[in-house]
Length: 286
Image (tube, rainbow, N blue to C red; front, side, top):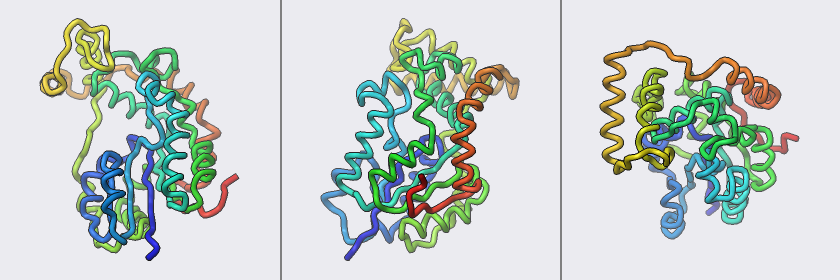
């Protein structure tokens, strides 16, 4: 029996946590595997179709974190190479998001886990915890995917996924070969991994700069991860109470304009492919 193998490889911050928590566990007619379970799953797969989901198969976002993997782009090449050696004919799912919005969301997550540099430093590439903005160019990523895999590529616009949940669900289930009847709308209301407000980011920056965390090594006090999370929860709740929706200039206009210009051609080319919705690509795009 020929099994259909599908790899959901990214991007990060495009609804992956929601898919993995709310949708994938309900898919019973296929085998579903997450990154940390891949070796175990490979030993126990049945004859069902297979979906493997891990949003960081596109590489690690922060420079220092990626050094372990020899850089984001290098880790991506190696990741795709390793995956293609096991699953050369697999289909690929890639969910893309406008890069400026994606970078804001990645920065938001960075602050949540203890980051202490400004957004300007974060996108500069000059700090150990900066991000490699070159690796967010989707056309190059699509070319790399098509060089490694002979299957089809489902590329989905993140905004389409959010605003047309039911239609996205039909496309997603059909593409991975899943016969289960899953109401995507029913499970779309639950918020997973919610973003911080600008006021919360400002206060978390102050806190993170004082205390030692993985992403802020110069602080004077190290907390256990569980303790840090408890303190973070208190700070976020107090911030909501004290500041409400008060706005702060976290994402400076000049930085956003610079990013918009940097990604303009790539995002326009990506939009020509997806038409702001989705596209199943069966042939080489370039």
